[in-house]
Amino acid sequence: MWPDVDTETDYLNFSEVAGLAADLIRQPEMLPLSLGVFGGWGAGKSSMLRLIEKDLRSKGDNSFIIVKFDAWLFQGYDDARASLMEIISRTLWDKAKSDKTLVDQAKGLLKRVNYLRAIGTTVELGASLALGIPPMGIMKRGIDAVGKIFSGEAEADDVEAVKGEVAKLKKDAKGWVKPAEAASPPEQILAFRDEFTEVLTGLNKILVVFIDNLDRCLPDVAIQTLEAIRLFLFLPNTAFVIAADEEMIRHAVSKHYKELSGQHITDYLDKLIQVPLRVPLLGVQEVRAYMFLLFASMSGASGSEMEKARKMVCDSLQSSWKGERISPKEMLEAIGIESPELVSQLDMAERLSPILANAPNVSGNPRIVKRLLNTVSMRSMLAKKHRMPVDEALLTKLGVFERCTNDEAYRLLIKLINEAKEGKPVIIAELESIESTTKEFQDKCPEQWRAHIEFLAQWFALEPSLAGRDLRPAVYLSRDIVPLTHPPGELSARATKVFQALKSVSTISSVAGKKAAESLSPAEQADVLAGLIGELKKVTDWNSRVPGFAGAVILAETSPEFGLKLAAFINQLPPKTVGLWMLPLIKNKTWAKEMLADWEKTGQSPLKKLRHIKKG
Picture 1 (tube, rainbow, N blue to C red):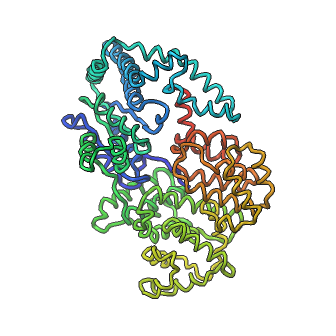
Picture 2: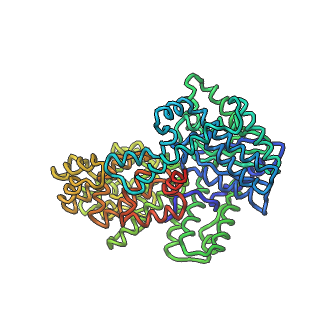
Picture 3: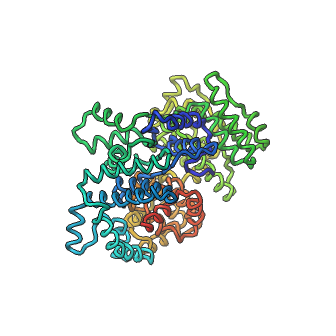
C-alpha cells in the first residue's frame, strides 16, 4: 500500500512546473511576489510546494529563509494573522541571533505581534480580565478538554491541558497588554513593517513563505491569512507561495464580503495572488506513468533503480506530446525486476489508465488513483488471509466500478451478485457478449446504470471477464468500505435495533452499546458494522465528533477482523483532516496501533496538531 501524504519524489513530472515557480522567486525584480498554486482536492498542491522548496534548496543555495505555514493547523486555536506573523517573526529572530545589530529588532517584531494580537480581541480581553475569567482566545485550546471533564470522559492529559491553559493566562495577558512601545495601532503596524524590512535586509536573504491547506479553513480564517500577507508582510525580498483550491477561496471571499459581485471577487483575488500557477491535470499518459511508478515502488527495487525509472518516466512525459511513452518492458529493465506479479500490474495499469483519466469521478486525480489501488491492495490481503479464490485483477475491476459510478449503481451490482445463483449474474454475461456501442447494449443496461453508459462501455471491455465467475467473495471483501448491501430495514429486527442504537452512542464506554453489540451473532455484527461504516463514509467534516463512530469502535472490539476493517476505513481519511477528538477513542486499541504508528512516522498524524497545541 502507498501512504497518502505529500512528497518531494516526483512521479508526475511536476518538477518542470515547480522549477518555473522557483525561477520566478529567484528573480529580484519579481519581488515581492505572491504565487498561487491552484488545484482541486488531491491534485498534488502540497507535493508541488515540496518540489518548489526542493528546487530552491538545490545546489546548496543558502540565499533563502524558508517558512512553512499550515493555515488549517491553527484554525480554532489562534488568530490566523497573528499566528502567521509570529511564526515568521520567530524564524527571523532565530536567524538574527548571531547578529547583535539585528537581534533586538527581530525580538521587537515578536512584541509587536503580541500587541497586534491583543488589539484584535480588546473587548473580549478587557471584559474577561475584569471578571476574572480566562479569555476565550486563550482557552479555545482547552475547550475540548473541559468538555471531556464534564462528560466524564477525561483522561490525565485532558486535566493537565486545562491546568496548563489557566497557568499560562497571567503570563500571556502580561505579554499582550504591554507592547514594545506605546503607540496607536496604525503606528504599530507601520513600525512592524519597518522593523521587518530592516531585519530581512540586514540578513541579506529572501524570505519564502509556503502556505498550505488554506482551502480547508473557514472563510474568515482564509481571508485573515491572505490579508495578513498584504497588510503586514508583503515587503521587499519576500515571496509567498499559497496552495489552495481556487474555487474554495472564491467561496471564502464571497462569504466574507457578502456584497461583492463575481467580477469584484476576481479582482480581489488578482490583487492578492499575482501569479496563478495551476497544478497540471493528468491525462492518460500521466495516469499510466504514475501507476507504473507506484507499482514499481512496491516491487522491491532499490533506491537507485527507482530513481533511474522515475527519471526515465519524467523524461518520457516531457515528450508525450510527440506520442512517446515508456513501455512496460522498459520499466522492467530500468528496475531490474521481472516478477509475474509486477508484469500483471503494469499490464493492468495500461488498461486502466484511459478509464481513470477520463471517468468523471476520478478525472486523473492522483490521490483518488492511489486510494483506489490502496483499497484493492487491502482487499487482496484480506482475501489471502481468508484463503478466498479472488485475484487482484478482479478486485481492481470491481473497485473501478465502485469508484467511477455512484452508490445507486454499485448497490444494484451488489444486489445482482448476492441474488444470482452461485454469485454469477446473468446480466453481466449478457452485457459482456453485446457490442457496447450498440443500442441493444444501452437497452439491456439496468436503468440505474444508464447514466454511466460511456464508462460501462470501457469497463465491460476490461480484463478479466466476469461472466461465469463467482463474485460473492469480492462482495464480501468490499464490505469494509461500501455501504451495507441491504438497507437496515432488511436486517433482522434485533440487528436493526442494534444498528440504530450504535448510531446514537456517544462514548465507547457505553455499557448499553457493548451489551447491544454482544447480543448479535457474528454475521449480524458484520452487517451492522458495514452499515455503520456506510454511514461514516457519507461524512465530509471530521473536525468534530461524528455520530456513529463510537458505535463502530465498540463493534470493532468484538473481533480482530472487525477492528482491521474499521482501521482500513479510518486509514482512507487524510490524517491531517482528522480532529483531535478521535485520538482518545482509538489510541489504545490493538487494531489501531499500526495505523497510528504509520501516521506518526509520516508526520501527518493528528498527534502533530496535539503537540503543537500543548506547546501553546
